[in-house]
Length: 376
Image (cartoon, rainbow, N blue to C red; front, side):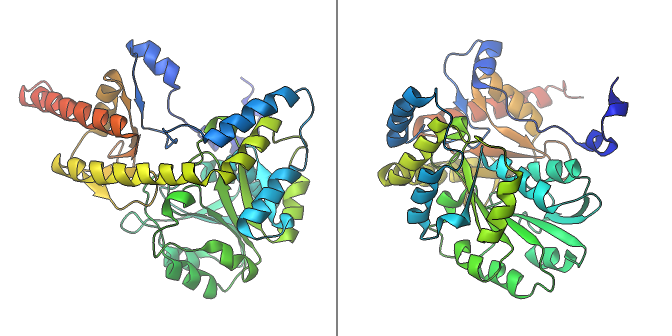
């Protein structure tokens, strides 16, 4: 009814569709236990140090938070060996990406991104009424050569995601270095490293922080939602040239990072034993899941994230629905046709075992359904 009051380009935006809340799924299917493997959360929970810090911070929630989050910026400065002026914070990484789009992207200007990547980029592009230049994946990987060739003097912003969500694939240190060396034009480049902590041990994964001094328009985003297990309190940060930090600060609202989130993030950075446990859990989970999924006929693509991207001759929409009824959530993904792939978060040992047990049962059930001729 109010469409005439809304900017026309906003009507092209498809709202982001997150997975169903855990309690809603339990209630809908009458479940007690559940393995939520659809949203790439850290199924081990938050860092114990962060939990304690949050409890202490609750007693100060009657005060406004530090609008500059100086304690957290100091912790990040020590952690990364960069001056505090290199850091910008957000209520989750999504807020930082919003700041970037609002700051650097105007109507009708060009933005370059990959197909089949984090959908928030497209939402922000359309919100700014920008012109999208979309580059196809190559073997489910970012094609940095084609992305670079698509950048012109009209390009204002480039979105990169490494490892990529939802495929888990990555571009190497050499590929990223070549990308910047051969750039003729100098747009703002956002490198979204939400899954960095899972990928950093890989020999060919880029240490992008080193590029900040060479390429002044680079913005690297990180999050506390994944490996640090703080998705529910919404806290992320970016690293960039201090001049860009100044511009981003003009866009943000005051008091956007609450007291509890600031305290939790500071403590999480110190909890190195917990981070190692998380990384080991994901590594062990992949070693368990990959051969078993392969034995069921799934193609499991290489991933440096805390999830696996699978394809195969399956109806992933039906698999998703049947798994939900059994108490397991995965994420159907559309690449070439609806629900022709899936993204599966690597869970705890018990969650991974539950996934495989129920997945085998679902596949057998669907097989019997098709053999009976009911699928006609």
